[in-house]
Image 1 (cartoon, one colour):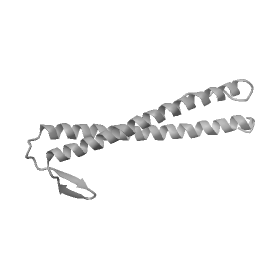
Image 2 (cartoon, one colour):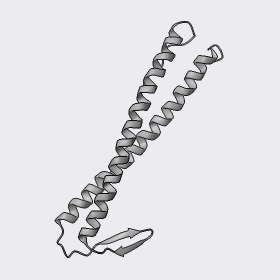
Image 3 (spheres, rainbow, N blue to C red):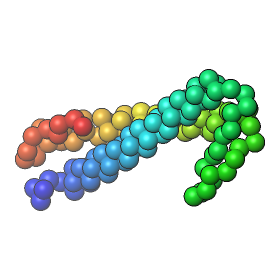
Image 4 (cartoon, rainbow, N blue to C red):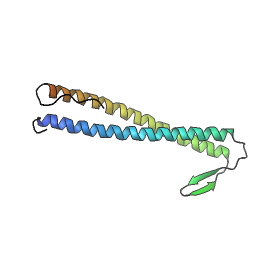
Length: 124
């Protein structure tokens, strides 16, 4: 890496940082998607339950009797809506990072193929 110009070294460092950021965003998105699916399954199960079903919800390390099926359904739907907004935000972040990643990858590959030692960088 000593043979590379400072500009290319900087681009490679940025590229590696982008890889880490992209991986972090993808992990967060995966976890939130799983939570949204779990909320959907919970909602479906509650909708199949009788109106007078006794429901407990987790508060910290305690289970507390909920005030009723409709209140729990509303709370889950609100939380699910919030989580879906977060997922959409992560999707926008992911797209932005992927675009920057691809642009930087092309710049580095161009610099490496036009004279510096080594070959092109393979995509993530």
